[in-house]
Image 1 (cartoon, rainbow, N blue to C red):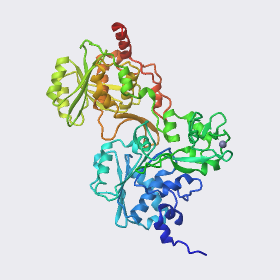
Image 2: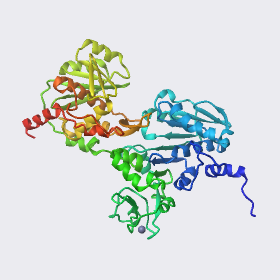
Image 3: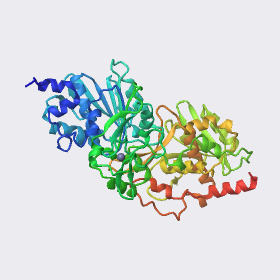
Image 4: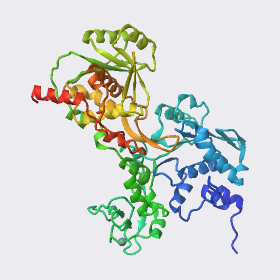
Length: 544
Ligand SMILES: [Zn+2]
């Protein structure tokens, strides 16, 4: 008999051998197994300093990440920040996942020397569990590894950046980010694009064709490997991208990770989907396609980014809505967003947006208001003193607060306060721009800064505490989108200006969305209001 590795050597060798040698269990007290989860073997053992994972729901990745964090704190002596967007980090993550893992595994329990709710001490090292929702969470201790779970749902990227800065003193400065993806080109999708792009390559047992499994076939691919395997919806089967034969569960189970760009050493990227999980049948995936919205299906089942095209506001859509013209400056409304550096305003009438800019004092803004005789809707945060004074001084100066609305109205007027449903308001404005109902009266070159602000904001799906998902607009890391918000406030002001006939954005005939699993149903609430008809009339008048 050749000598065997000792238990101590197995523990120290890698997170994988440690998990196997100690028979670790997952948070539901089932043994962690790598027969069905073969696709997790390589990620489980992977110690690349910069890792990104775009993943579907329910593939067991959080458990993988927690166990790796524990192992690194113990055997590599790393201090770790584990960040999540959950509102209540303890109830939403630490208790159900981390504490359950500790309770069910003596091999982990014996490593924990201090166990407070959000801080686990392992020997002389710590794992801090922190929320990315508020700056208060950003701690002053330095870390060697920052794990950002649900990266695309981190509501406040400034907090993520603050955590990031805690790595600066470390000789490691490792950074692992993973998430269900959101919009194309944002979050983990963008990070994965800039990685070695590991694909789970599956070999057909009949023709030996090798490719990854995807939703639709790609028969026109130039390279053989790009002729991916796919799901045949009619027969509800996985099919070979080479010969069309039905692929077995064993084929999918026995894949291997292959980097599309092995020369990219700076970042390791994994794409994990339910299509590589042998316990998920093709039929189950087709069911989810039929039962859920397309956005949810891509992001949470396929692990792929998705953007509804009618809600992408970019250079192309803004320029398409650009109709330069001098319009009468009557019944002007303005929307105002603010930050520490000043006030960002957008001015419009029913005939479209004619100006935008930044003032560095409230006096200057008040001057603009008087010059145009404008009705103003203003964001009172983060500096409410002057907006409140102006709202007392002028009866047509309103303060806008975001509040989710369960009923049909997107906006709700209460004296000098107006409540608006943030997601539905931005959806409305975005779709009015993409449909060229909301027009820009400036020349294209005058819109550069404005266009840039819209490129910094994207729409995605976020999971709520009760597990349901809803749509939300998030800002890109470190970027501003004040003019996008100022436009939304101006749009609120316009609905006031237009009077009672258009106090709601959505036609009262529109039924309540029935699909509550995604807010995608909101989109079918045909956004039809008097602005579009006014703009259409205007278009005819000025004969474009
Ligand atoms: Zn084949």
